[in-house]
Length: 347
Image 1 (cartoon, rainbow, N blue to C red):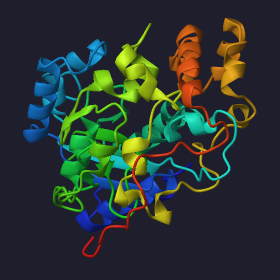
Image 2 (tube, rainbow, N blue to C red):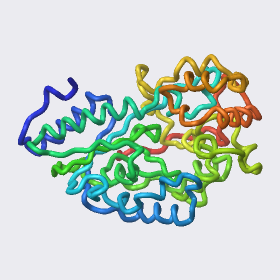
Image 3 (cartoon, rainbow, N blue to C red):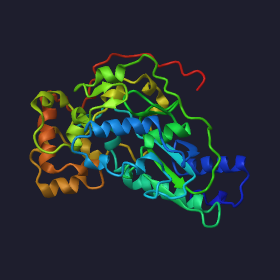
Image 4 (tube, helix red, strand yellow):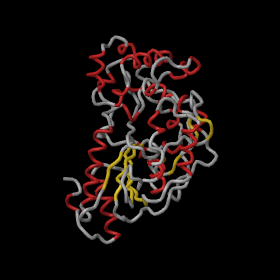
């Protein structure tokens, strides 16, 4: 059992931090950090409030619910009495050179198995380890289905900083990561010990590259114009002024991350045996094949994958739009040219 060999009570503070890191590594997480959970968010919560008040979330009504819960992890809607939050990150991007079929049209996080399943299972094991640290300890694992501003908490814990496109950028890894949390009522040692500071400088590559101009300003996304929203959450016909800009994307979009200098590092790639590795089923199909599928066939094909979130009618709509600039089997082109990696000295 992962982490079973390091379970102890009454850890010295230094050993406890090391034990948490060791357990997280055993479970397959690439980075781990800890912060206090009982201090409400400030700037990041204000950005969230403005986002909702301006209705930039479109039809994603759940983003406007549980608003007070999102301010503090110690809220009764999450874990009353919470004192600490363990934030973890795991790489999901895999090399795309020579990718075939539908793979280049699918956002990198969604090309493999649905991470909500395997990621949540491992978070539960991390929560089990936390509960073993003291009798009666409580711990709740969270993924992005919970009302939590996870990038803000990850930045507070020092896991990384939030870039101008709203993605968490992890030092040495970039932004190709999924995030998870374990909230607990134990007072754990905070490490690395300081919130991360944004290091984008004057760079606006992510904002400038967006095909639909979805960014109103740094850290301000109009989700209604975002290709990920248009291909995953939006139902029915699209705004004609945006429809032509969605191609070649079928499900999600990676453009604002493709151009980020912090992602130009070999360490950004997930290992070969990653559960995020593209499924073979997507490499053997083209966009035209989707138009021929029945509902039953699509249900079987998408089972256990992120693409299951989109119904067949909307997927056929997406395929028709993506085919408008189809380059099956080739990597989607970004609008920005090659850029030099940033200076990461001091990280």
